[in-house]
Length: 159
Image 1 (tube, rainbow, N blue to C red):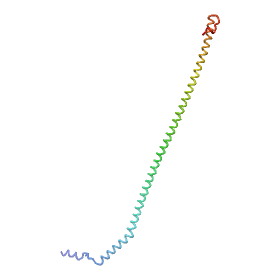
Image 2 (image 1 turned 90 degrees about the vertical axis):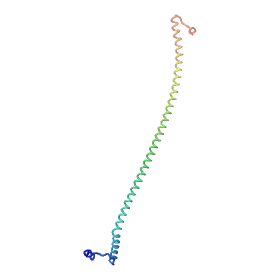
Image 3 (image 1 turned 30 degrees about the vertical axis):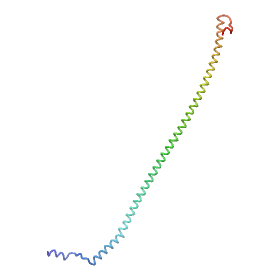
Image 4 (image 1 turned 180 degrees about the vertical axis):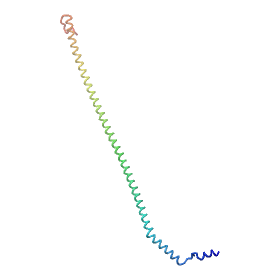
């Protein structure tokens, strides 16, 4: 045991005395100095970097949102323009079909009128041909009769 007591005499004793207060003051001064010279500037730099990163990220998100809005607006206007073009094309097609039908109806009316005129002309020519044939047939009959009978025939005997 004398050996253990020998160590006890040379050992550090933790008895609070005036140096403890000095050590606490030195530690507090070091904390203050390190805080003002090292930690606060680093924290400010990190904070500004975070703000810039977050700000750039926010700015990028705003740009992306703006781009997506413009794309959707473009697509909407494109759909609207296509719809208008289709409606205009359909209106032009309907107008062309109506005009075509009118032309067909006019041509049919003209054709019917032409056919009626031609029928009338043919009937008139047929009537004239009948009259001419009747006159010619009577003349030929008289001529044939006078040759067969060797004498002239009168018109009264032909009826």
